[in-house]
Length: 575
Image (cartoon, rainbow, N blue to C red; front, side, top):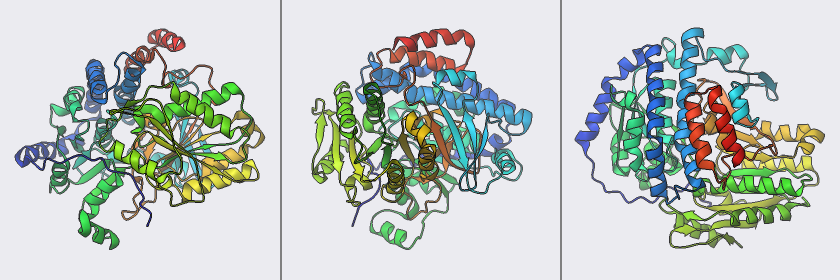
């Protein structure tokens, strides 16, 4: 039997639960739930403005603490990476929620920029980024569209926005957010989604892996903590189990492992397996979840120059090494065309780019065991870079047999610095596109996000081929010449599993986060980027002045303005 899914972190529980303290925290957010729902939009806008100021104020201490605990060099490019993923993406979400609430107050719904487009399968998409000229400049021409469920009309899209703010659509309640342990912004972002997108008050249970961030979260979110709309607690699995069963909690949102989701919904051990087999849930609460994925990156064959090969190899190396591979959107399987003349050159250049990047502390519990399991299951492996007691080598599993659909690389999320490559036999680019789409949809585990790299010449000569991949991939985000992570960073796009998973086959989860335009009919996000932009993106691995750029970026996102732009662009040019 093939084991499928994400691998939960190995965290030793203390089993000491301070029930009185937890009950007090729950009671606080339960007591304020009605007041929060009835709070004037103008007051919520004021709270978001305060959060922007407070988050920027704590950003350096927050990021330095994260670097210390992850073993990153605060003087190196990794500081900028950590700052962007943590404070940077949170600040953007806060600002875009604020802007949407301003629209809601003035126009009755958030105003997305468009355009509105019609696609195959009776689907409509709406443009959500760029929203303005600043976005066009800062994000190097990258765009994002939210595709809607089949059959949804333009009027239904707009009628379905901000339902939580429409009479009769929202009941006061408390959401328990079980925070992720890998990315510093995820627990606060999930809380903001529940507070401002769903009108719930929130209790965050921090993950033990990064609960050192709680003091910084409390300072950044002071405007929500002080009046009792938000509480943050620490604890292990025993604490989580107590809270998920708490009578005063109506909703649970988890960012983590499908195994944790199943424990909440069906229970643990043999009894949990029995309940799952019978589709018998043990919780009456609504549970939404953003879980793992064996994330693919499809390399559409074409004629690439040496510089283009090098750029895309660096692009992939950035996706793979970001946060040391501890991301639910880290590429796990590179899908190439077996007959592509440049396949070997591309993989060799990918290895060369990895050699330039120092290996990192494998900070997430269980990483070494997971690497050992993948190495044991592979017929060959390449370890690139120095490996020590703390630092794990960049590990590439080349030429995995695509016919071996039970292979571990296709069925389990590695959750460490391991990536596989597989090739598909096809007679033409069109046949490869169809085969790659089918392979992703039917073989790989999970539906959270996917990536497609295609040369502009290929897109000009066979536009329908690439567009068919984009349209037919059943993933919550599809990034075309753009890392799917941008969908999470933009916040105006939706982020989550492709709709349709059931509790007994949850895979990447259910429900969307981000979504600051508050759509209720979304199916997926499609990102589009430049194959090779004029400037190397400042978020690429190894950019020397990443810290300077990202510090300016955070201040800009908090309060955009033309006077801030020249210094930000100048620092980006120096990278």
